Length: 420
Image 1 (cartoon, rainbow, N blue to C red):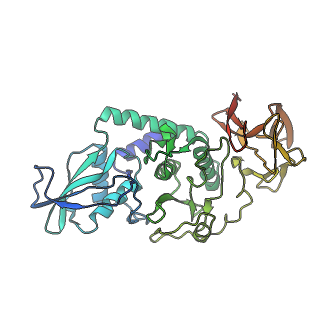
Image 2 (cartoon, helix red, strand yellow):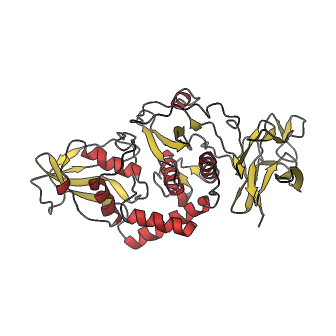
Image 3 (spheres, rainbow, N blue to C red):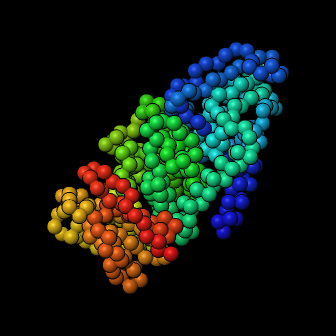
């Protein structure tokens, strides 16, 4: 089933269904009269230098739900073939707004990570005739290898998503996987989809990776950006409604192993604009994110993964494990003494650091002294392991990973247990 899904996706890629945008720290700096390519046949030509760092001046050209035009499909198909020159003379595309279209395509299609923001173009009168793209990678075998690695990383995420999951459960599964497994790139070096293989990147990387996987899952997703904030995030459609979701904000710069925030997941526009980190200076085009369904969700402050078994969702709420069917699965995660025993010699008041994971229909979570399992069919909780001093856990591909805190404020990998 998964292989079939990938074959379909790859076919769509080759036919021009998907593409990418690079973001950097200066806006489009200049249009220079005179071609850098002597083969450009147009009566006039120009060069758009693109970005040299981190710029978020994207116009929102493709933020609406419209289909790609024949010209846009042709450009994307040409990127896939690493075309040196793209003839668009027959489409009568105006010079005005052409750059918006080009960069909109890059944003909407993160798979083409090797297409750079600078390009040459030739035009006659008011119409663009040819585009000469720039590529960061020009060897097809290298791109094939790198793209294969990206799809392999995507398959690991898709293994955690099941067909019976609701839109909400699928979105939160992908959100939590990325926040738990990726780290913010403080060097500001990586702005593209390769975060899926390097595991580090800036906000552009997070938003592109999330959109890429949402496209594979079949859930509509857009990239939103703010020039004023120097920041990008996503808009995702859940059960017919659009919501803001900001993975970068939910993944602290000082990475906390096995900890995941949900403060910026599935918010309305009013909620994200008035959050602890207000979002501003962005354009949703003709889309709206006015549903408040999740603004005050009971899982909002959970530091563990939000997981599901069948149609039931589970999360950490304060000192308890709770479920969407109204049950308290386990309470007093800190043992009831008000201390979370993070090491054998230290405890921190009011610091519940529990995590959740699912494998083979069972829920796993940690208290401050043990790892426990919950069987929803039997409605029973059992001790699974006596590993103590844990600060959260999560499960990927049948392996349980857990963290600890050897010193105040620091969280790190502590060990793993195979559940297979």
